[in-house]
Image (cartoon, rainbow, N blue to C red; front, side, top):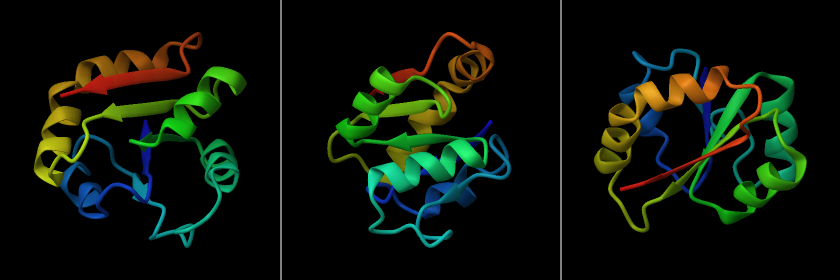
Length: 111
């Protein structure tokens, strides 16, 4: 699974998590910083990314539209980049299962 990190998350997450999720990127890297949620959704869908965000709008889109793309919704408040990276690493098995389950479109993680 490739992860697309939303603008509310640090671009440094891409490098920190590249060993677990190669091919991941950040919206800033692909020129979508400031883009609408719909534009990010469409990009993720067309390019086989799962969206990682703290934004409730993506949670809502996942519930209404379903996958693809899948959405990993982080309920972490004002967490550091290190804490977010640790949360994702600690849930790597859950993310792998989520990636292969065709019935799930939303995975909520809290830390």
